[in-house]
Length: 89
Image (cartoon, rainbow, N blue to C red; front, side, top):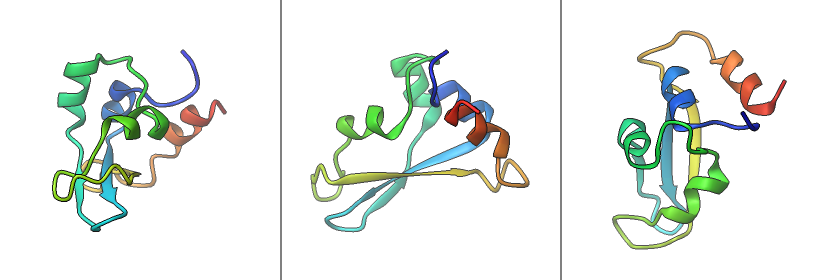
């Protein structure tokens, strides 16, 4: 497998991905299960892969960023092993 996250690795690692709009500050947690079902479990899920497919549902801007974080409802600690895998360490 190449370096980086896939949708399935994010789900397995109990991560959340939040999209935020630089234009209007709207934000939304992405549904990783739905994205996995649409693009496949091994589809790359790094920011460079996801951002071109997004636009703000509130204002329509394409100036969108992503925040990857451990889901505090599902995991304790900071998900260090998943971060290390994404970096290829």
